[in-house]
Length: 581
Image (cartoon, rainbow, N blue to C red; front, side, top):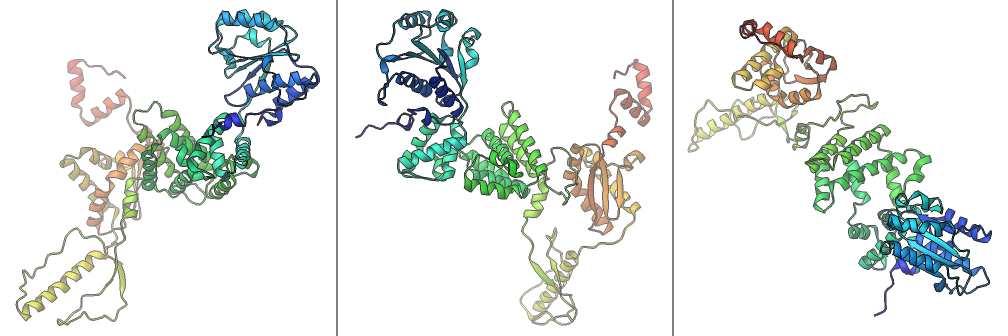
């Protein structure tokens, strides 16, 4: 079995031209070598896997080639000393290094000392290294590499020429992976390479490791589905589908989609953070000047452009704000799944009920009532033809009237109409005739129930029946619901306005609005039946000015109770009670 070399080692840069995404640094080092302006102490800092150690080795080889050594395979191994400061971080290790520095190189011009993870040196080791780093021998060059520059003491930093390595962009990483795939004879989709590049988070070494892993899974053909399955990442399609459901205000299916993601092992935090990033990507697609900020493949870019046309900028900004708020609260939440589900419901309610101009106002954190989906998802009743009950004699079939047939939807019946005919026997011709008459009468009764009346009514009658229902609720023990609809006194009556068949109720906040939404069906059924008008409906409006009508201070509450029952004043005097606000 042939020995396998991982791509991170096999394709490690051998020249500055091979280094990906660090053109500014490599050009600076090349010019410094050519112009003999190279400092004797260099500090390479930046994220993991971006080429710090590789550049240090290339630099060590390059500066020794300038003296007439043209063999590209010569690596000057005797001139390069690598020290891992993570395991050699004591004063004795640094002193041993200082002793070696004094000896000039046997081959080449310079001895290069590469100290990796230099931030791991102890305070005493740093102090022991200061003098040598400031005034090294002319044949010695120190290259320090670290991922955490802030942990290095300022006296060391001041003695070094600092090079800040940046994260490698998704585009550069994907292009380099495409080059490696071509070298290995692997067919790879552009979107698949972009997902690997995004997962690597700017580290080329991580990208190559992920590439090897996915190739081992999928073989010579690399598809987006294989990459997402192997890396266990949420695909673009999940967020495209979630956004479509949000725009359709389809909360039930959106929650089912989230549950499906959880069942696959994804974290709720991962889902909501990815949704926020998806909204951000849609937002940058709204302006042609910012499309270049979209770091995805060409196929996915077309999908983003298409979906961005369905969304408004206001929706995307509010969606990002809601998702980001959930992201911030996730770690401190006791019920994390519920937090994400509430955020998803709020997202799906953003565009609910908006006019074309988007002027309809809703309270903050508004959520579509669950009853909306119950009514819309109920299967429609079959359409039947209503035939007037005009039958003189029992006949094999109903007579077709001359009047045009009216089509009405069959509504659910609460009761089955009882017949006044009594029980009918099916043992004689007369009983069969009576049974036919009984069925005709029953049909007539059903038709009457199906045609819902819309008779005119007086406002006084509506208020009368409204108060009757609230009193009945109070007698039955449902005092909280009764208090919501109570309009017995003049002040409470002002919050209710009747315009045609629409009853407008003003409340001070969204909480009371949701309470009325949940309890309105009982009082609507009662009033509609009493007034024989099934067009009557309720609209709840939030009026922040109404807050002023409500009592909040202790003094106000006392005065309100005193107005209702003067005996409370006597009770206060008898016991010498004080009012504390």
